[in-house]
Length: 196
Image (tube, rainbow, N blue to C red; front, side):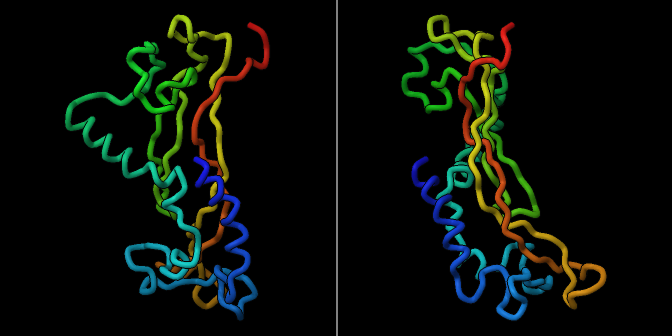
């Protein structure tokens, strides 16, 4: 997770100090450039934005996507259901498991897809329990609450635009805007806000 935190601190600085500007051309004073359908093969972001921007594949929410999709494909092939319920933790069964499975606030991941965002697919963490696992019994207790932990991630947001700069959007034309979004990356245990 440490490399992804470094990436997040580097992103805003690197994007702010490119010359010419990363998001527009020098004559539009930072206004995002409007790209025609011919310039954007298969609806992708322009190559120079991706090449000069951050290396998204190093960020945890992006790096996990391919392994999650492969695991989902294997699970469907084997007819196994996805994890959706709060598990009973047995220490002997989880010693070799990943952190998200050994946690007393266990979570799973789902792939979130947004066709107008780059990266288009991100791994979002989802808590499996409303409470937390009691380390002595291995079962869920309501003495604590599970909550998601999020990190900020810079993405590109694709929006329709007008090639002539006025009037209705040009069919198939898009501009790309930098935007920070909150991505859930794990779960932790906290005290309830009120006593039950």
